[in-house]
Each structure stands twice: as C-alpha cells, then as structure tokens.
Length: 231
Image 1 (cartoon, rainbow, N blue to C red):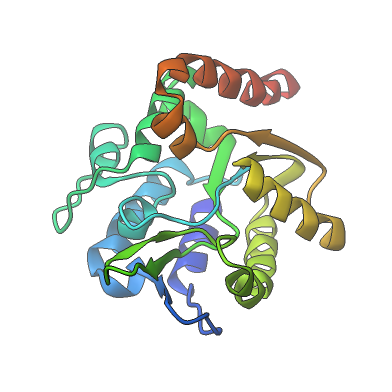
Image 2: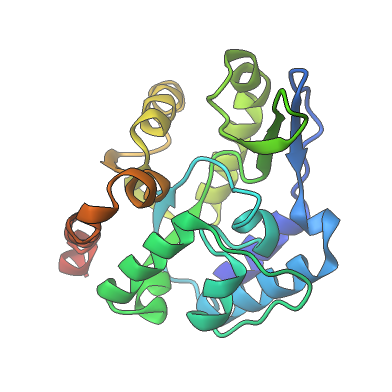
C-alpha cells in the first residue's frame, strides 16, 4: 500500500550529513514517540491504497507543522479538526497549515484531496538556525549557500525515494518561487519530473497577501483541478 511505503520512509528518515555552523536538523520521529504514532494514523487513514498521486513539493518542514506532527503542512490543530487525529503531547499553530487546509476545504475536503495528492519536501526534516539572540528559528534549505551544498545530495535521494513510492511525475506542483528555482536545477540534472507548476508558498500568502487569500486559493484550485479532468 502507498501508506506503508510512506510510513517506512519516515521510519528510516535520518540526516547524518554535515551542516554549517549555526544550523541544526530536527527529526520529530526521534524526538517524540507520538509523532510516529499520529503520522502512521494519518497515512493509514488517507493513503491506504495503491492509487498514483501527484506530488506537491514544499521546502522543508517547520518546527510547528510537520516538525511536530510528521504530516506536511499540518499543525496539531488541523490534524485534529480536519483529519480527525488528536495529538496529546503537543499543541501547535502553524500559519502555512491554515492556508493549506482552507484550500483543501475549497477543493472538496481531506478525503478527496489526499486521494489525489501527496505532499512532502525535498529536505523532509525541519531545519533551524541559531539567531544572534541565541534563539533557534526556522530555516529553509536554500537560506545559506553552504547549507544547500551540504544537503543537496540528501535532497536528491529523498526526492527519488518519494518518486519510487509510485507518484505520478508527469506534473509536479512546487510551492515557492525560490524553491522552484532550486528544484528546477536539480530536475535539469536528474530528470525526475515532467512539467513544473509553480504556486506561491502558503506562508508567503498568509503572511504578506492575506487580503488576497481567496484569490490564491482559487489559483491553487484551478491548477490542481487539472488532474480531475485527466481522470
């Protein structure tokens, strides 16, 4: 089953490569036993089949989204209210998750959406960087040239493993224009995907374009609904 392949991928997920000074990788599956439990419940609930899905590609998980729940773009609030899975050991709110689940609701709900799409990231673990204040903040894999050089090989292997689960790679949806630049370069070298469709990142929309949120939801639905016409 598709669900079993994703769960196995997450169970074995570990980054042992180098990192520049001031960066760390967080692995929620090792840090919190309940993360592994709710992640398995999620994929068993929505991916318990062998249907080919289109790939939606994020950047890397945030500390308050998949960095806690193990489910991309899903904080504990959305995990419970939209997906029906309660997490007891953590309570998180993540801005990207708000947009994604409002969009999923407009698309037709979680069952319809997850039947057609699989979301993950080229670097599927949370990355944090140490600020001058000493506080650890979310970081993107492309924020630092040395960081990208350290993790790029791991990213390629991760993307190929996602593809091997049985994804439809004729068209992929990439969240974030800068993310798309980097994925495009990797794709040019390794020929992993066909058409690359770029959508604004949910965090960017929530943080800077909230007044136009419905326009962006409509843009997502229009792009994603193309696969309904293929079926």
